[in-house]
Image 1 (cartoon, rainbow, N blue to C red):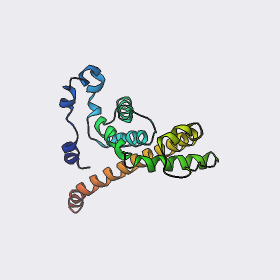
Image 2: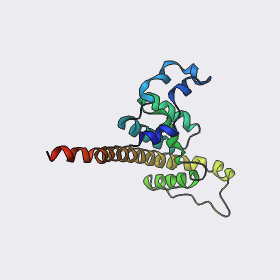
Image 3: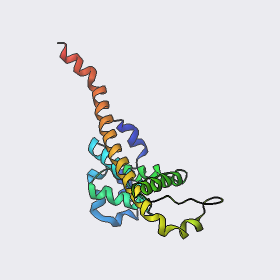
Image 4: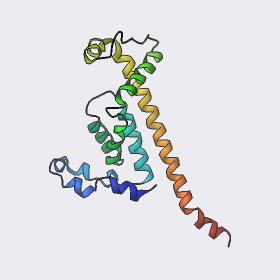
Length: 174
């Protein structure tokens, strides 16, 4: 994979270690695997970040960071992947998760009724929508996490074959 491109946009480990707030987290944040860019670390960070991105919970960045530290995968990438569900895409993504969860639980999806959906409507109907939303979010998060992991593994391997291909052909003709 293009490590130089990733390194250009990811924060440097020494810069993060010297941050006044993050210094207090101790040695766990300084583990070298949290900052390496190898196939295992990048694909694991993709899985963690995509899984957390589809959880309808606040503080997704903290959850992704904790998951990265626990699984010892690239921390900045895990946090970056949660922005798949940003304020623009969050509504449609969670609505699709809700529809999937309602279908899986065989419960009729609620209609919004007249007008636009509002926060008041969402809070008043939360008792009815939380189970389908949670079910759909877990399924979509797991599926996208596994799919992202597999795609990064395949892309990384293809990149290595592409980069080393001419070298292997040169040695095989001798």
